[in-house]
Image (cartoon, rainbow, N blue to C red; front, side, top):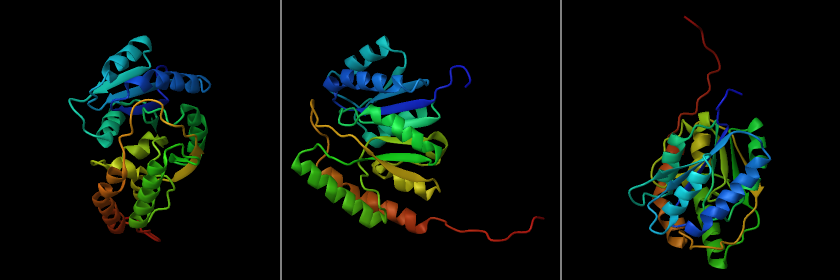
Length: 242
């Protein structure tokens, strides 16, 4: 491996998650220690109004594997991912949320699957959310899969591992982070799901509800459905060189 090469880039959008950031750092460092590969963590402050920026700066001062980007205001998760992807240097991009409901210890299992697939997406087999959130997530997944013609069990799971070359061919628009698996498949890349851990939120409040899980995503779903219906999908069976 060339000197100073980064193998994994972990991109984490942050919006008002000050109390979760130190536990997040500890979780990532502990999980990545067993992998013994160069990695970086990019914390993207998506216009937080709490103490998140101060904590982020403290983390980055204490560990040079952590870097940060800070937006001028809240632009949403897709923008945060897009900025993090463009700033990343790893050959594999890993996405996580900052709410500590997913576990970085699932990363080794997911990245092993990249030997056979271009992208690995988690699905939360045992959800630790309250009833309202479970119902809204189930409705959202059902609606997305029905309208997009997909069969992804948990499109909202934030834990994903994607090869850089695959991600570079995906053009992101606002709200499109929900459709990473479909967008990757449209470009001809292979995607597999694996079960991952899920934990109750200890600090802060959820940024999602039925409104932004289902209704706000309907327009985006129609766009994705149109893209899928209109994508070029031909196979050349014979050709003659000049």
